[in-house]
Amino acid sequence: MLLITGGAGFIGGNFVHHWFENNQEPVVVLDKLTYAGNAQTIAPFIADGRATLVKADICDRDTVRHLLAHHRPRAILHFAAESHVDRSIHGPAEFVQTNVVGTFSMLDEARLYWSALEGAEREAFRFLHVSTDEVYGSLGDHDPAFSETKAFEPNSPYSASKAGSDHLVRAYFHTYGLPTLTTNCSNNYGPYHFPEKLIPLMILNALDGKPLPVYGDGLNIRDWLYVRDHCEAICQVLKKGQLGETYNVGGINEIRNIDVVTTVCRKLDALRPRADGSQYESLITYVKDRPGHDRRYAIDPTKIQRDIGWKPAETFESGISKTVQWFLSNTEWVDHVRSGAYRQWIDTNYANRTAG
Image (cartoon, rainbow, N blue to C red; front, side, top):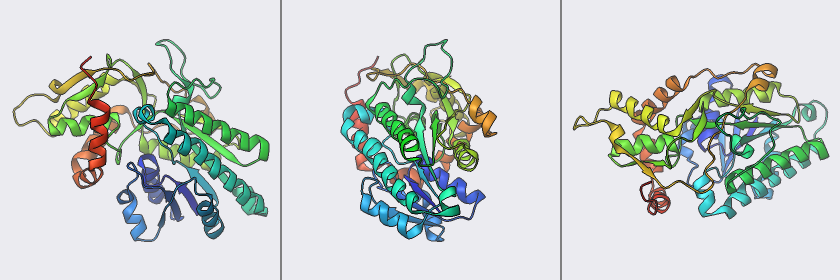
């Protein structure tokens, strides 16, 4: 079986869905179920026994040690992380604790577990660490896309904490021989996305007739990766990846933030027209930029395409259509996660941002 940290979150939860669409091997999900973790996302697999959910912190080494000894997984897939840049600006300590200390805890318990394995079990074991392209910093308009050899230049507490976790994974491979793999992905989007992030926030605000807040001039560029494409990349790296290596996973979709927002508006105009006949784009509001906002990210996926044979199946146009339709069709899930705590966070983050 697999041990999946953060498996009730956005990417981890989608991975569980993707896994069981293609495999019957059971999984154990270790998730703290913070504001962005939702057991409802993987509820069908818990109900039928294919997934076991353990609510615990990855920093709780006793629990991690027990799970490893009891379930004897052949691999650990480490998705668990605090991942929202704005939240890291308001409260960086939690990001250091989860992303750095938590990853250290997982690595060290994995090392002890793996060291005690023998024969084929020891040879087969993998620790796959899921990270982000934000560790590389920001690109200029004409700079080459991030490759795996790009120096780390993190610009937010979030990206700095993820860079620290990546360095720890590398160190555990080189120092202890722990069989690690690392993936650095671009911006994910798709089903089950927590609505503080850009795309689901735009969809849900638009449907509620609320302003669509766009930071700065809206010209920041991201490479957008449909989450199920990312999940397949992780499956392929787990199966074929060379130990100790890092693989950049990108959607090959560099798009300006404002164009992402107008595309969402266009999709909603077609699928859920406003009662007064006006276009959703009229709700766009430019607001004060966030500190240290990276201008451009872009992933060079040459290595994973060449060595693993993976490439994204979705274009941004096809992926965003599926995403908008999913949010329109899954209002019960959306209503569940938009709790009082979520609304309080939105007020905290946006209340003091005057129009830019």
